Length: 390
Image (tube, rainbow, N blue to C red; front, top):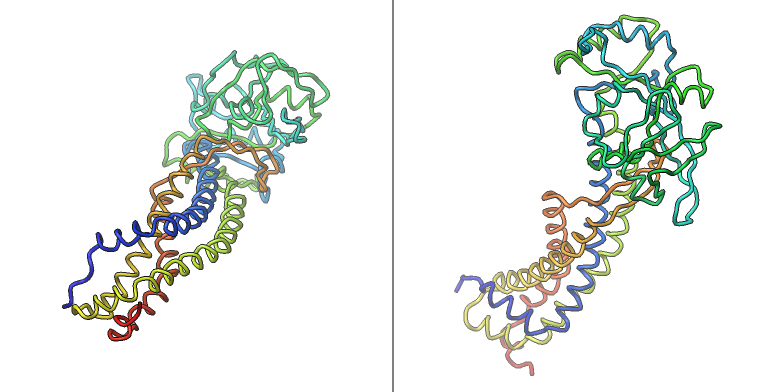
């Protein structure tokens, strides 16, 4: 008889041992929860910063600078960039570009957990137009030439807890929060925006940090990049805006993934041992049953597959439970420091179909590793010895 044992038979064996099944599945589900949460954190960070900016915009920084905070562009360089071909223009024929100032300021967290480095961006009316995803949700926009600021929704919701009417002191002056904007859970939600000219004065700067320019069309990037390369006085690096911010998430996302996966591997060893103990106990308690199956014509391979299916089903159940628990963390927002920019970034955990698939495969693999040795042990039982056991 070569037909394998049915899945319903395998499931009934797990149900018959409710306590051990629940205990083993719970331990495995905890490991799955940790693994899924780590992947969701890394994905949430990538989507937050990767969703910052538009591909039709280009960020320009000083050559060799990794971030806007480290960069400087002189007024002469900015004026020259404004004359290059490939840029979009307004009705008056002026290039659509924004000369920007970025600084990091220390602000206290409202929960008393210390200070946070927050990005303050000096921008322009054109800069606001180049980022249509940033929409005002409360108050109004800052007035050009004033000491008014608007804050991202992450700064209002998170540990910083800014609100309309708050007064902040940085750059040797006081700034008033007059509006709150939402940029669709992107990195801009973790920033404070004000007038670029006022930021230059307040921080006594003679140069800009970066420029953001709008392209005439998607094909204009190559022409604009070539024109920049032909200007020896412009030693700058350029990237499409969305790619620029996505790259800034990689170091922290990779760190979270590596650390989390290392912890998961350590935890999974214990879960695999637990599954192995459960399956060995199942073999010991079902010796006569295994002998009967062999006497009925089931081959050793059928016995191995039956126990492996049992272990895989145990892993799958644990994976589903762990995923359900991990999905609840999507309601949580995390505020942390981006190791690339050393600034505060607020992001949520994101569960994607790819993460679901990876987690379920991982949980099934744990079950297989925990069940393979007990399955081989069961298949090696001699029919006569198995039937004689009490």
